[in-house]
Length: 299
Image (cartoon, rainbow, N blue to C red; front, side, top):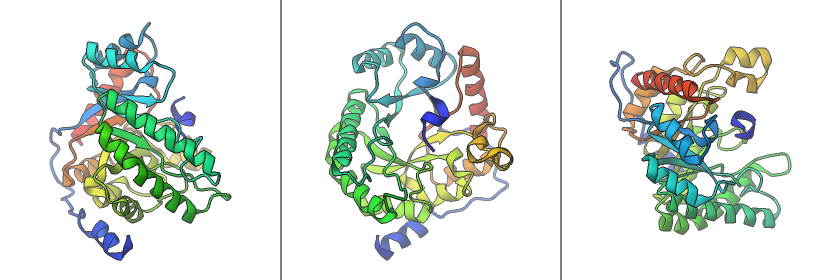
């Protein structure tokens, strides 16, 4: 699934991925306050005459942080100043080059452009004090084989690790509708084969509902989960109008089993960011989303 359409290693390694994070919890576990922080993408904010105004709207609505897209038209220094002046940290950065210039492309020049975009996004993330960069690692198509996508993207992500370490920003691979890494076991294996603590997973809960059960993925990915995207999905709307119609449902009113998701996050001791990726709006809309997210986090 593209963001534009939504908000404008071996057997031993595989065995480890399968077994190490598989602790389970009782279905009747009580709800509790969780150490989760909530954020929204800056592009979700309608209103404000400056970047700082939009940051303030996010904070005033009750959010703890902001997600940014880099590279982007907004000057980097303006974002750095807004974050500092408002006191709103950067929860995550999205590499904006990865879809148009994927690391899996057949053309080596395109792969080079994608890699350069990744390096720049890491550098800018470091300047923003952000510790997580979202990366779509590859796009599989009729022209780009699954096997090539796997090896090409792994090779380039390994080459990007020193840049991640220098920026103090980890590369977080996201599960999207890119026909790639379709199993949680494979997803864990892909990261483990890279073999670096600077590479993990950005888990998108809503993206998974069409294909399976997010809580199962969370337990298998375990400590590899670095960041979360929070959004909803309706199988009923999907069945009536097609796959992308499934996203046309209010947060908390679709088919995500949020209590089960929260219990799975408890099981892996996740204490990071939950970044909303839903239709945004004005101050009132942002406040509603913050309050709704708080309820979901209670599970």
